[in-house]
Length: 232
Picture 1 (cartoon, rainbow, N blue to C red):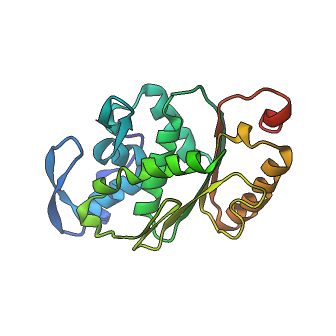
Picture 2: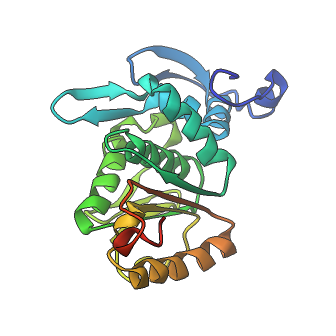
């Protein structure tokens, strides 16, 4: 458990035991007899535990890989995303951080009921791309969660536990009318105008305050003036 970035004790685990034993299958094909209550508790405690055991990601032109192969810096950033309610991160291109965010959303939505994830990106294609990275892992949802997908379209996902994910292209009203518990403003430095960026902030932040939610703003650099000024 220490390796998976979460300190829990055997007694903590035993308190959540359900004496319901099944053979789970990890993404790498390994099988293990687990107590459903304990395994659920471990996954809820540590997104890294769940992501490394059950999730995958795709490299275009290369193929699909186990998320167990996350790089060191991705593991460290993952801890920041979980330990802090608000994170602003400037990234380089092709570092896999959009994929990492997708996996965090996936973990949050399937293990906690009535969560609402909101993804806003620089355009509809980019927003749908992040959502698509989440959809790639629908096949990896552990069967013992008994979780069903009730809505699955190009802009949203909804599950039988009452949790959902909605994606939006940038606009002054993007995210308005939602009550997110976790929000991603992806490629924020490319939101075209200060008015659009401030409009999105004013739409999302009050709702996150009400739900005690988490806000993640990530972007590649886009200068210190013009379109990228507010992010800078």
